[in-house]
Image 1: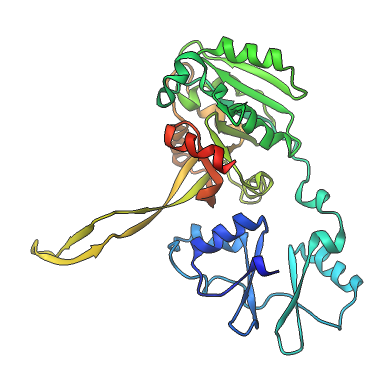
Image 2: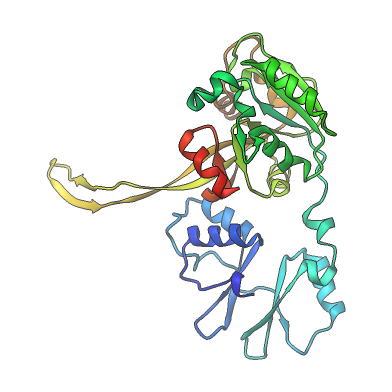
Length: 349
């Protein structure tokens, strides 16, 4: 209970990190006297971020101030089960008659079927774009294709695949170009239990151009991922957001904070100094390279033309279709395709 209990003056960024660290989907807000003030879910977090809330703002205006509660000594197990089943809560605070937080009930401990709920099978196709040269990872990629660069004694691509197979994904499509024969031979030797189909690029066609041969292959939304990123996130929630939001493309974005290590000068209309911002902070949502796509958007990819996935997203928007964003904590995204992150990946995995 202590790990998920926070004060209302913490920032959106701190709340995001707390949710990521605990692996829970909801925080409990209390005051200095441990009086229950409300709850703050991962859904509340995404809503705040996507509405343009600064990561440095407190969550005081965004948490649920009237959460469902149970009063200690005045409820039975049957009542708790009914609440969880009816409203699909992740947790329910337990308070005394004065409103002081006394306990927390979790879905998994009350209904004892966490595996059925939180780890529901997600039988969804996955496309891994693995045809790039990996110039940022030279000299390794002078010898190996980028997806086979080892991280903790295992190639990057196996880390990526395991994140999906843990959910029940069993169908993988891997686009090949640079040193594609080596990558194909690796999987032939590995003989995995999951299914792999290779898509050969005769020449580099960009991150979306390589998807063109897959236009008639899928009949439901599917994941697309770069081959040099490892995302520690709830993939089921990403897919659910895509479906429930009616999106045609959903991209996963990492919340990053950048600090300029200098004082920046703001000028007035006359060109005179207005004021100096000392080491200002800026928040950005960075595209991680993990997406969910509807099969229909693949028809927007031109044949045999260099076409990045950013071009595809722009075309989707130009046609009046919906593009969603699923924000994740910066610590949940590892860009193994650059040396600085690669060196840190061993510590973070």
